[in-house]
Amino acid sequence: MIPKIGLSEDSIEKIIKLLSVVLSDEMTLYVKTRKSHWNVAGQSFMELHKLFEVQYSELEVIIDNVAERIGKLGGKTIGTMNEFSALSRIMEHPNKYPVQNTMLTELLNDHKTIIYELRKDIDTCTNDCHDAGTADLLTGILQQHETIAWVLRRYLS
Ligand SMILES: [Fe+2]
Image (cartoon, rainbow, N blue to C red; front, side, top):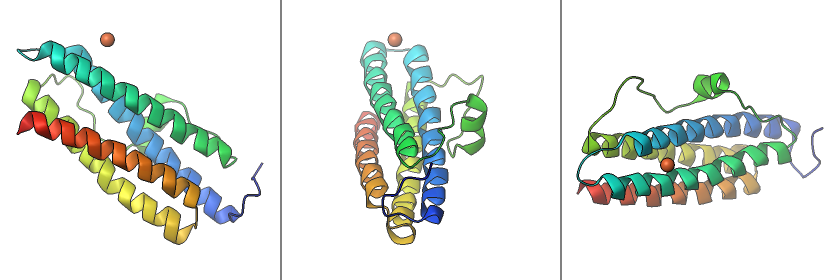
């Protein structure tokens, strides 16, 4: 059922599609951060093992908030790996196990990709759909990615 919350049906449909893509990005980056947690090796093993755990835990909360926002807008929330893979704007690299610095650089680039995409998504929510609620949710998420990107950049500098 489409909720009556001052948004047009067209806007709601557009936002649900947009949020499904954001959810897919976050799920993909969550899995990639888990993979890094599992496979990191080298002198900073425990430091990075723990850092990645903090980061995927943060992504887990983001994922739940985005998924439930879709529900609040009356949509069905996708929940299969096939759908996430089809929609995600984040690339995966099967069978690759990079060394520490490459691992950090790849994760940093993924967070940067999400930051760039979220800026566009926030503009769409605000200007095209007049959905302040979703724009605000995505703005908070954008700030979380900016913080994670800053932390990753510090390890690389
Ligand atoms: Fe673990």
